[in-house]
Image (cartoon, rainbow, N blue to C red; front, side):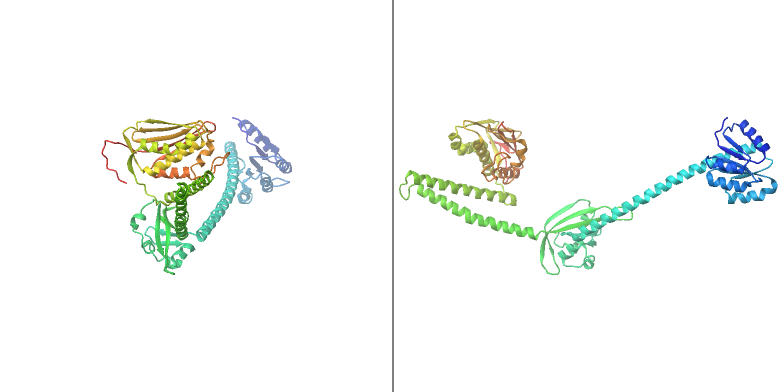
Length: 515
């Protein structure tokens, strides 16, 4: 077997080096160098790395300990073996500690034992090298880990500072409870809301702070569900005032076995919103009184003049009065639309559902827009399916408002000599209704905007309307639990749809209707 060990042997006796060369060659150690002069051996080690270095002890120029010390400086991972006589045994033992000697071998040596020691020395040298590599890798990893820990620690500190800033400067009151409902922490806004200091608040229970809430707090603090509570009042102890608030409750799970679950309550003062609602209601009341009533009076007065109650009118006078009447009717329509939108948004309008003939309702709506359609020589077609002997259970007046609005838009945007199709179908008690025109159509990207408040036309063409008709129609259909939408594309006309679920009932079938 051949061994690739790099071995250096130094002995000033050429007979010894010749003998060792023969032995190592015979054993398969072909990569060994031999020196009889320690200076030459030191020079060689300055440019070469050896796994095992073997040196005699007694030499003229330099003894073995001195040589091995220099060898150790030049080849720090090499395994060092000292050949020594019995008389030098004490110095050899001393060298183990001073030089880092791997082993000393007494002369005369046993060849088999020498070979075994060389092999073991080689393994030791390579173990030291691998250990050093591992230590270097571990050191680099440790340095990287320390740097990473510093970065993460800095991130955590920064995040905590941000959270602390949010907590302390948040305009909403924040209060944290444990599972027993005891206060753990509060922010300054919470102190201001209750008019109590943090120290006093921490002595309170959740039931002390929210006395007006009829809740099972044990159930709340054993649940992970989020809660949003409105129309709540809390008392400011410092002023004695009742403050309207909204309360949001959230569960914070425990981070570890040593930690425990918590609950965070966010308290929002809605006094400003309540005041804005009051102002809006006052505005609506003012609008009703100051605009609606005078408009009605003006319309009735103009009608009185137009009927010739104060004498005959010439053609020019009649035209002017009709124009004034139309303007007042438009204003009254705008006021009524604004009022209806407000009622829906405020939740003040209650639907009055009754069974009615849908066919008859559509006919009434068509009659209302027919004069305008005839003036433009437009044709209106009805395509109904499964609507005979069927009544619809809904708010008749509100559904009428939606249909008139859709028909009015169709007549307005359909060109002269155009066609308007009204489709209705009852399918599994659901009412499907649509109004289709062959006008210019609408870009698909503009469709979502049309059902928003004050939407006035598209990106290419602006309407002079209020932009509330389709918005109000959507509010009405949504209030019925239905759906309204538009399908259109530029140059292909438009078709408005609405769907009322489970709205149909046969005329001859008894049913208990409840508003």
